[in-house]
Image (cartoon, rainbow, N blue to C red; front, side, top):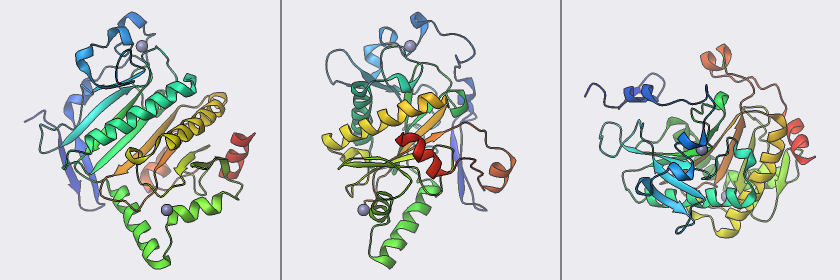
Length: 303
Ligand SMILES: [Zn+2]
Ligand SMILES: [Zn+2]
């Protein structure tokens, strides 16, 4: 019991903390150069029996989902219930997501979709986060590019807050706030890119320098429900943003939420570069200082 993970709730601020003592032993290869022969995510070193799902679904894989062997959550632990998986973006040894081509990004997105579909079949799961930590400043601990899936039986407070706010807005104004946002931003200086399926914008109140959101134009709430044309469009947007991010040389995270029981949402991916470390003001007060205006960031992406 001593080493078993558990979730504790702080009633003063409504936050939940996951205690996961075993995770302190996670490997970290960022300090040394990784040899491909010993890299755990290079295709030659990934055992077939460890693969939960792969894309393409048969033959040689481009992207593969494996179990996270240092999970905080597990489906065997009722005190911290959930699943954690690693998605190996590509079996080839890349160390930066920004090196992937369009086909490789598409393969990764397809696998994100398949894992979201598979995990949401467990009725205890209320929330799935699909995310990437690229680089040390973004929290990565292994060099070979990989993403992660975190599926939990609890809904994070920020997601509850977003759900409540958008529901309230919709009830009061009889319009979907995401549809409204898309409509407004199409004509704004914060527009990065769009086609008929997706729109990429630097949000009005960006939290990070050069932050971008890619939002589905269709009123569809998570990645499981995107059709192939939408996935293709999403891959194009990601590739375009990746190209520009590469010149900035920032580490970054991206996130896609899946609030299982909430259909009144639009799917979106948030891409958040990490050029500066959050310090006293951000950590202490929750107020965020962002040195780059989103209008300026969008101009950079559009160039
Ligand atoms: Zn590797
Ligand atoms: Zn909508």
